[in-house]
Image 1: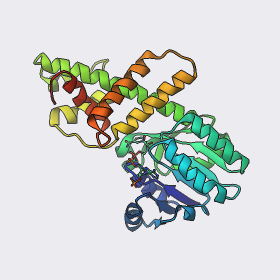
Image 2 (image 1 turned 120 degrees about the vertical axis):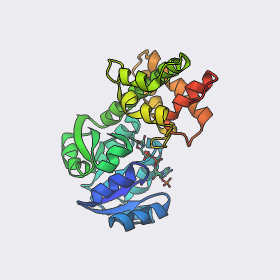
Image 3 (image 1 turned 120 degrees about the horizontal axis):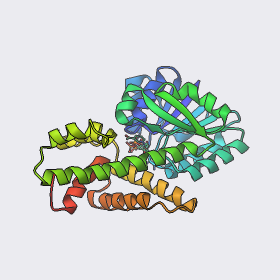
Length: 289
Ligand code: NDP
């Protein structure tokens, strides 16, 4: 299968490396040097002109938001022939993906929204979970590509459903992260040994991905890597809040969490990692980590 892979960021770069082991693949990145480096490292073909991606069987995008995906769609769709497939692995907006799917359908091109979970460790290892929205036929065709970097592929509904489930997942992650940050700061203030506290929490019913995988290295070892930008997590919350809003539902927890993450983003800036909201919670209380 001939594939054009568009977006070689923290997730896309290793994912494209996995795709390249089984398929002929062209890579395009806004900053061309990254695509050139990928070609040297993984034997892919770096292309400078976006238009050179159009002749492939499959177009795969993984970009910050649906806005950037829509810009690429505007350029490429007029150049695409019938029978192709567009796979969007961006954590995007369900309404945008439904619109794009309908537009591509008119040109006899399939579309799936296929966001991923598992972070950069999962992308590096090729063990991501992929939640897929689209027709059964498009899902089956996409599996051949998605299986190169995903160990669990789940068809969750029509176009847009993958993005909806992803936004729900990240809203739950964010609310959990904020609550854990408040609880651990409180324990610290009380003078409780946090190593022991985390040992208890991770054996107890309060445990989560946040307490088991994210917080120990940050809080106990002082390591604060940037793996998933706070700006992207805040975008996922805004998608979840907008889904609730357009469904005419009162969802105060999603609303509050979104507001808190927006405040943290405004304070910490675009370059911050999402787990750094833990530092922001401390700052709100005149404390530091
Ligand atoms: P990064 O910020 O690391 O990479 C973004 C990529 O998009 C880069 O290749 C960048 O190019 C490109 N890009 C940015 N703006 C534009 C633009 N206007 N036009 C064209 N290309 C552009 O993001 P991630 O890889 O972390 O995230 C990608 C998606 O995956 C997001 O939707 C995110 O929410 C989701 N995601 C991220 C996870 C993570 O742990 N990081 C986990 C699961 C999902 P350039 O090199 O030129 O900057």
